[in-house]
Image 1: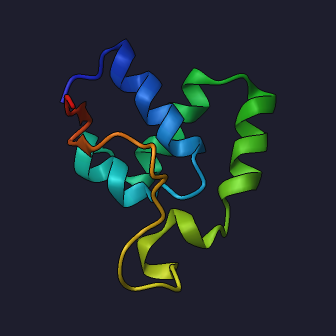
Image 2: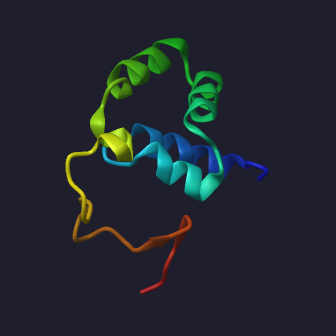
Length: 90
């Protein structure tokens, strides 16, 4: 998949979100965790990248296999339904 500026912005946003696992990024964009890390390193200032890495390293919510809950996921009641990164119309 060729990543345009909108895709890159969305990947960065998803990577910063605490409850969005790397697996969700893989499903939507085909990037594995290491590729997301490389993208973040290229797109961010060094200090921002280091801050992000410190936040996500060892964070259970960023890895589906490490999560403590089996069913469901946290979702804000005001969040729009997202299907493969296309926001559905109401």
